[in-house]
Amino acid sequence: MTNQFLDLAVPQIAELTPYVPGKPVAELERELGISGSIKLASNENPLGCGEAARAAYVAAAAELGRYPDGGGFALRRAIASHHGVELEQVTLGNGSNDVLDLVARVFLQPGRESVFSEYAFAVYPIATMAVGARARVAPAQHFGQDLEAMAALVNERTGVVWIANPNNPTGTWLAAEPLRAFLSALPRHCMAVVDEAYFEYVDEADYPDTTRWLKAFPNLIVTRTFAKIHGLAALRVGYGLSHPHAAELMNRVRQPFNVNAPAQAAAAAALADLEHVERSRAHNRLEMARLKAGLDDLGLDSIPSVGNFLTLDLGQPVGPIDQALLREGVICRPVANYGLSRHLRISIGLAEENDRLLAALARVLDQMNASGAG
Ligand code: PMP
Image (tube, rainbow, N blue to C red; front, side):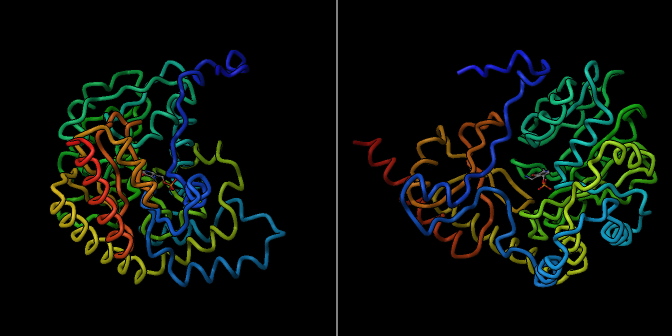
């Protein structure tokens, strides 16, 4: 059914398809009348948050009648000191998605363009098109971002280049040298966003921490989140680090209370809880290896991933397999909206969840093969 207000909306809204989130457990269980389901669909930390963050959140409940600190001073100070940058370089967001939106609102408009890769994170086109700018998509190479192809699309209309390192949903990553060369060659009128939502999971030796490059590249904006390794996805907190002048512009359009008070408190505590980060990283490393081995046993290929998720190539349209997994109470993430119709993204869960996924997948593939043969 066409939307009766579509002709009243600004034209770019007609082009937009909404972001498809992972299905919540409660919704699936209601639909199918089942219980005990598991969700491996949103790249969350299966260990949740650390104790310190939880305690800070609970303590903040004493002040729910008060507005948050609109400047987010304590959290920004903690973030600045964590990264060795100035407070004025930090922009807080309601999740890092919010920061991506702030970037688009400041640096894009109708007549301008943004550049990103095929298979790159779905929020880049949404943020771009929501402000009426044009999305230019460079073909990927082996599912990864092809920096040369992206550079070829940069022109005088380009306001922003979006780079996910590592990328979701592919889990692919870019090494320091090619990325540095790309940023060096980028014209100064074009902002480069390096989205490091999964930064803490990456173990590769030549994976760059681009927060160290902010001095060298004044047009660089690095985004990070508390939703992944810090286990605070529900609270929605992320941030951008940039030149103070870019941050000042983003803070002009930022809603003053975009990050709520319990979220600010929990995020500051999470940042200091290095043990929880290390525990989460170790868990991911171990379970990623186990999951990969289990998938190998099933004869399933995945895109090599450095994040907290794996994207499988099922070699066939993923819909029926995804539906069968849902009936088994296992929620994964189809990524057909990215143009990956044979792929299924699986977030690394707890050991028992990963075991359940592997067992369910084995059963479902057996059933498919049996019905295919019969
Ligand atoms: N960037 C990437 C690459 C992501 O995968 C995500 C989460 N899906 C985000 C940014 C946004 O995370 P959040 O808004 O929860 O900080």
